[in-house]
Structures are given as structure tokens and as C-alpha cells.
Amino acid sequence: MTTSRSWLSGAAICALVLICISTVHGQFRYDRGQNVVPVFEGWERNTDGSINMVFGYMNRNYEAQVDIPVGPDNMFAPAPADQGQPTHFYPRRQEFVFKVKVPKDWGDKDLIWTLRSAGKTEKAFGSLLSTWEIGNLVYQENRKGAGDVTYPEEPNQAPAIEMVGSARRTAAVGEPLPLTVEVTDDGHPVPRVRPGRPARPLELNPVEGPRIESPITQAIVKLDTGVRLGVTWVLYRGDRGTVTFDPMRVPVVRAPSPGTAEKAEPLRGKATTAVTFSEPGTYQLRGYADDGILTTPVDVIVIVKSKVQP
Image (cartoon, rainbow, N blue to C red; front, side, top):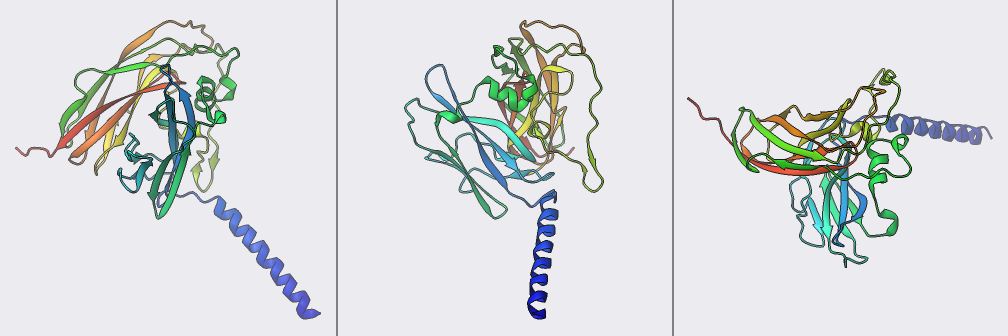
């Protein structure tokens, strides 16, 4: 009996230890060494009857940016394997990153995005199930929060963006390259009139520092506070080396001060940034025009050469 009771007690202790270990493990924050997971966000209809399959990703690292070239480790099926997906992945959850257009008679086939990284293989299955159809309200709930949803739904068209000058450039390592785009928008969404109130302080964890858990706060492509229309620049595909934007987020039209009424009217302006490269190679940069809900991308290809020594 004593042996039996001792065995049961030991088992209970082991179970308790395992539970504690699992709990602690669930709180670990990995800065690097983790894989990237492709995400199917849903599908949307185009006016010509075709369909956009919308994808994003979850880079499980909190700090490390991951590069996965198009090929066996970053591919779509059915072919072609290259459907315009990114090869450079920023940390954490990035939503609505790119779209793949399929014909209106696509049917019930799956469009499969496969990513292999950190020794793991992950797949996202895009399908035209009715429950996966997305519209402006879905973008609004995910990019601004459910508290900003209005009924009836506010009309909103995605902003337009156009490069000033050529979409193919050359640059030298370490020398800033200016990039300018023109942006227009329909003026929606109209900023809601709210009384001014102080921002909530960011919750701190004594061990890990600031906790970043929401896809809204994790997003690379987002408007800074006080901006109504802006542009965010990202490295979309690239070779080795570091790419730096100064600034990464460029305001085009600023929002009114809290409590000030605003009306829907066309917005327009230019946004300029300077990009610097640390290594030679070929880089695809993407600028997203952003009205806070909807985005529109524009791409520029930059051939970077070694700096000429005097």
C-alpha cells in the first residue's frame, strides 16, 4: 500500500511539473529561430467577375526578419509557383499582404501557398467557400478594430498610388535613393468625432518588456497616429543586406485634431522617402497607399551596385 501511494503521489507530482513547464513554455518569446506560416485571409470579387485570393503571414519571430526565395521553399500550386508572393517576411502577424487573381470560373479548387523555413513546412489553402468572402467591413474590423465599424457601412474606395518617375532604378551601396509617389483617395473613411482622451499606456512585462499581441499593433503597414492618408514602404523581395527607409511611414494628409468635424472630400498629395542599401543586389520595394482601412500597392525595382571608390 505504501508503495502504491508513493507511486500515485509521484505521478501526480510529475503531472503538476509538466503542467507548470507547459505554462511557462507558452509564455516564451522567441526573437529568432522560428518559422513563417502562410495565411489565407479570404477572397474578394472584382468588377470584371474575377476573384482575388488574399494572403498574409505569421512570422513567429518577434525580431528576426526572414528571407525565403521563390522556389521549393516558397511556392504556389497549382502552377505557376511564383504568384507575386513576398520573399522577405517581417516579424509577427502581417495581414492582407498580397492578392492573387484567379478567373471567375476557378471553381472549388484550392490555391495552396507553401512555405518551408526553420525546418518546418506550412501550407495555406485558399478556397472560394462563401464563408471566406471578405469586404470592407472585414478590413475595417481587422485593421482598425470592431469599435470603428459603422452601420450602415460607410462607402470607401481604395486609394490610388503612382510612382513619380521610373519604376526601375539604380543605386549605390550606402547612398540614399529618393522615392516619390503621388497618392489620391476618396476621403473615406471620415474620421469620427470623439472627445480627446489620453492614450492608454502600453502594458509592460517585467521580464519581456512591451507585449505585442494584437495584429493591429504588430502590423508593419499601418498609419501613424494623427494621419488620415499615408504611405508605408517595405522590402518585398530582395537579396542579402539591410534596407533602410527614412522614413518608413510617410504622412500624406493628416487627420484633424480630436473633436473636430471632418467631411468626405477627395484627398491627394505626394510622399517622399529615402532608401539606403547595405549590400549590392536586386531589390523589389513596395509602397502601400493607406487610408486606414484599404491599401493599394506600387512596386519599384532597384538594382544596387557597389559604391565606386574614388
